[in-house]
Length: 76
Image (cartoon, rainbow, N blue to C red; front, side):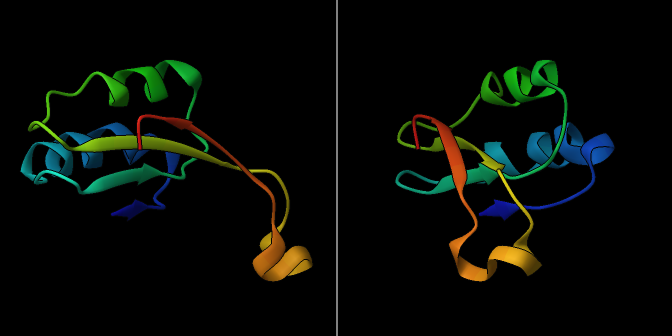
């Protein structure tokens, strides 16, 4: 599941989605939320085998198209 919402709704959406995921599913947070929100998302209780990943988009998509660099963190 890739989440690309506004930063002010990132935690609420994650709290609704992550607990419903099943083993081997990955929740990828691609929002520009504060690091504290990212940490809160990583701590949401989840089913065994569910992975969470934070993806930081490091450039503009229109300028880089499919080659936009991203930094990934988490267990997913």
